Amino acid sequence: EKMPVISVERDLLFKTLAVPADYSEKDFDELCFEFGIELDEVLEEDGKEIYKIDLPANRYDLLCLEGLARSLRVFTNKEPAPVFNVVTPSPEVAAQTELVVKKETAQVRRFVVAAILRNISFDEHSYQSFIDLQEHLHRNICRER
Image 1 (cartoon, rainbow, N blue to C red):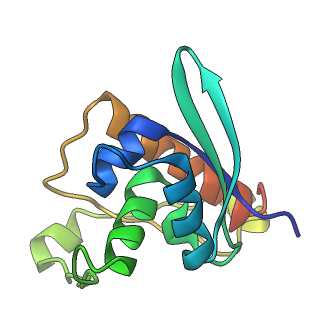
Image 2 (cartoon, one colour; image 1 turned 180 degrees about the horizontal axis):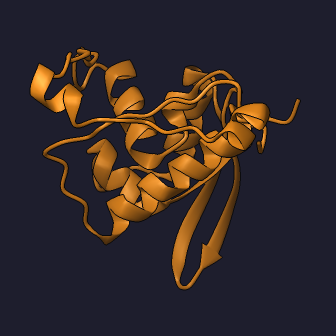
């Protein structure tokens, strides 16, 4: 099975990783090797250096810049591992929430997952990254269904 590949802008990645100004492609390539991923290709697009990174097929948390950077910061002991909590909605919120799956959709997608995100702010980059993440999940977990 083909490994997922993400494309990230080098300068944005290095800023998000909080690495020193003299951090190089070689340094990042070594970090990738230690972490178990691969810097596959370096391209230039619109005057920006783009890193194409091969990821393990079972690491869906790495499919966006933010997830990759967070995992690398945890790996390098720059921050603690995150703790996620599932929050049960209040009865009022639950009463207003409904996920509708049409019969014809249910025949193609046996399982459907949804999330409600609150108190999230997007800028142009983070919004595009979020959309890219959804597309990567669609191609990988959902097998393009």
